[in-house]
Length: 270
Image (cartoon, rainbow, N blue to C red):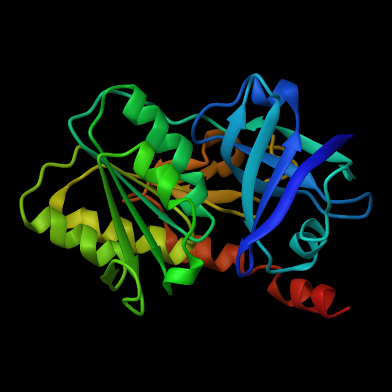
């Protein structure tokens, strides 16, 4: 059983969850994820890792409260224990020294992009971080992201903080200005990652997305996380979760993510 060190709602509907997990913390790499089960009757859900402390033995994730399982996570308190906390899972991102890498985060992805930015910065890359939210009160970890980037570009739908609009549009403008970008990495909601991939496609910029598929076991056995990439069926849990955004079948991904929508709705109501 892994103990909860911290759980708090840092902005409306987005929660930080930190657990004591020394073995996982000693092995994690940027881009990997964990699977958690909130209680003995709960389902297993994947969470992208936002930070870890190999010395203190803690792992930090962000999640959005949207259904029954995340509602259970949102009720956890320091000292509580969860029956399942498994990781690290998935393939880590390839970190190289690049002239400029742009990292795009939205929603829970604002936190998830942090260890990626830190790793590229430590590798000697030029790092531009772009984060987005509907309004300024939904933003978080700006200071942390400033500390691991050369430039932080903030976009809000209502223009309350930073530029008005969304990150994919501002990314397209940046590329249209002729600024060199060697790699784009996007983490967050499916819609945003799809939009980022379409924004970079005309410029031929390599784009990696961290897919948030439905998962059960996280070891490639159940097949629930199937994705189509480059015309091939792959498993997000063992082949990913990071894929070439220009090769992902986004329409099929969205359809599979909605497969249990009715059951989720009934469960949440009950």
